[in-house]
Image 1 (cartoon, rainbow, N blue to C red):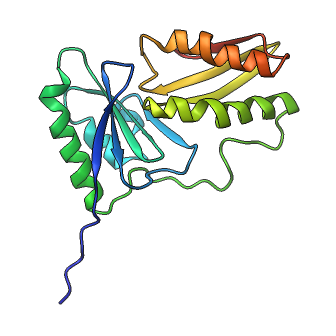
Image 2: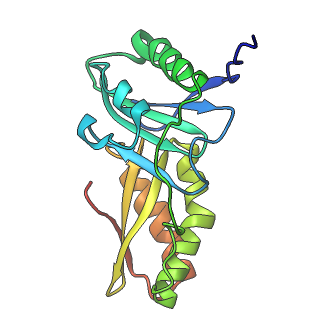
Length: 193
C-alpha cells in the first residue's frame, strides 16, 4: 500500500516595517496573484481554516494571506523571538497536510470591474503594477476602495494595517506617484485606518 507523500513546504521569515508583524514566506502560491485576504479577528476567518487556527494563539491579533505568504500581526506584550518558531511550525504543519490556506473561488477577477470609469481603471492599474508589489514585499496589501472628486481611498491590509510608517508610505510614495501619473488625482487617503 502506497503512503501519501507530504507536500514539501519551505518557509522563511521576513521582518517588515511594522515591528508587530512578521511575514512567513512559502515556496508555493497560497492565493492568486494580486488577491489578498485580511483577517482582523477570528470571527472573520470562515473562509480560512489556517487563519482561524492561528487566532488560537493568544499573541495573534491579525492574519493576512496573499500570493505566497502569510503575515501575522502579534500583540505588543509578546516578543517575536518567543513565538516566531511556534507560528512558523504551525503554518508549515498545516500546509504540509495539503489543506488550502483560503477556501474561496472567484467567478471573475475581483480587482477589475468593467463598469469602472477610465480614471478608476487607470488608478487600479497603477496600484496593481507599481504599488502592490512593493507593499506585498513588506507583508501587506493595498486595495482600491473608491475615487471621488480627486480623492482616492485605499484600504491598507496585513502588516500595513497599524504600521507606524504607513502614513509616510501613503503620502510620500503612493500619493506622489498617483498625482504625478494622473492629474485627476489630488489626494490619497487610507480608509479604515
